[in-house]
Structures are given as C-alpha cells and as structure tokens.
Length: 149
Ligand code: RTP
Image (cartoon, rainbow, N blue to C red; front, side, top):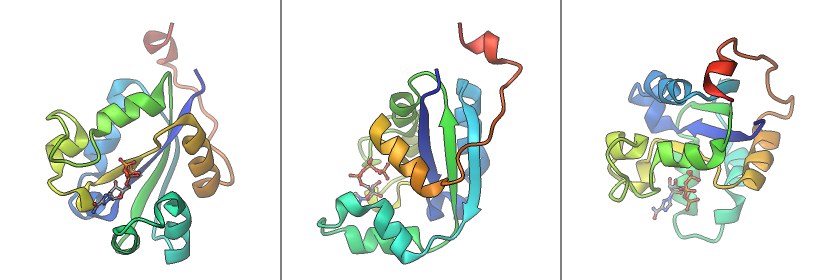
C-alpha cells in the first residue's frame, strides 16, 4: 500500500492554469498527496532528471521546456499508483492519449504534454530521492478505510 510515484506538472500545465484540475484528479481517484513543491529548476537539475534521454534528438528542447517556468513536483501514494498514475496521465504523445486522460483532455503536442509521471517503481524511487531528498510528508487520511481494504 505504500507505493509512491513522482508526478510533475510541467511549465505549460502551470501557465495554462491546470494545477488544480490535475491535483484534483489524483485526489479524487483515492491517492494521497505526500509531497508538493512549486519551484523553478536549474538546467543541470533538469538534465539529471532526464539523464536517460540525453542521447535523444529532442533532449535539448526538452530541457529548455522544463526550465522555461515553474513546475509543480509531487509525491503521490497508493495501491498501484505508478501504473495507475500513468493511466490517469495518458500516452506520452497526446495524439494517442485517450479522452479522459490528462494529456488526452488538455494536450496536443508531445513536446508540450503538460505532465510527467514515473514509468516504474524503480524510477519513481529514484525521482523521489532526486526531487525530495528530505523525504515525503507524514500524514494519514481519515478516509483511508473507505478507499483501501
Ligand atoms: P514523462 O517522462 O514526461 O512522463 O514522459 P514519458 O515517460 O511518457 O516519455 P519519455 O519517452 O520518457 O519522454 C520524456 C518527455 O520528453 C518529451 N518528448 N519529446 N519531441 C519528441 O519527439 C519528444 N519525445 C518525447 C515529452 O515531453 C515526454 O514527456
């Protein structure tokens, strides 16, 4: 039950006023907010976050995009939150994202796809350690037993 994922609302999601809508979708699903930061990231930090993609032709543009304005960095917790979070977000390329997903509802282009979500438990743990070295907040919702058996 303690699975956690790292979710980031990218600069376009912030500038377009989608922060509340996105947080609301994760809350209403039944996941718990365990970390929340609104920050501008340095270029070196963005390069570290996306280090696995450093050989891709779009890497430079991706880093420019992530440093172009503040982002919302979050830890979300709950059963299967990594995989389910990816489903809530939708396919990487919004042209393929289903309606009802965040990218399906709010994005058009792959290079402006509003949100990031960890793609595995392993990368979630690495990304949480990078963005939240101090660790998650410690709280338990009183609604817990109404969502989780
Ligand atoms: P994310 O990490 O942001 O959740 O995205 P993802 O796993 O679904 O996709 P990934 O392949 O890891 O790509 C990371 C981000 O790079 C941008 N991208 N641009 N212009 C392009 O062809 C292209 N391809 C990928 C997207 O912003 C993507 O989310």
